[in-house]
Amino acid sequence: MRFKIYIAIVFICVWFVHACKVSYTLSGASIPEQANTVAVDFFENNAPLANPNFQRIITEGIREKFIRQTRLKMVNENADLTFSGIVNRYSIEPLAIGANEVAAKTRLTIGIEVSYVNRFNEEENFIQNFSRFADFDASQVLSTVEDALMEEISEQLVQDVFNRAFLNW
Image 1 (tube, one colour):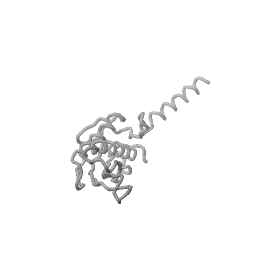
Image 2 (image 1 turned 60 degrees about the horizontal axis):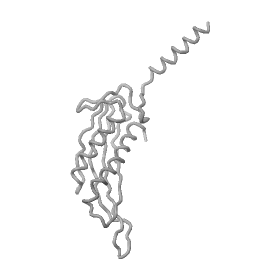
Image 3 (image 1 turned 180 degrees about the vertical axis):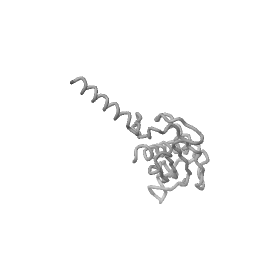
């Protein structure tokens, strides 16, 4: 009798595990179980004065994040999950005015608008703006630090997009 109860409990536990509709990755992301593919469209540049390399950096950053931290396969079309977007802000502003009214720091701010489509659950779809910045010493010429700043900001934006799509932040 105890053996039958034990078998019934094990069967019920196994059934619950397989009935789950969400899968989890090592990153803690919640990805729909039925989703197997993801597409990340090339981000277009709509920001005046933006470095033309940033649209490639952000697109590749998002693609690499999904390849490294999810089980999803990257495809070009007909994906289960689709990301697209634009670079909509790229601004350089003086900060921390010092002696003689000269800026001691300068801030590079980059913004993107992301559209996410989950073909299995329309309630999770979104269009959202994300913005991040990095400061640098005003005595530095932007062109000497711009590549490093774009990489830093891109990493933050990629994490924000990932968190919004798969961690519901």
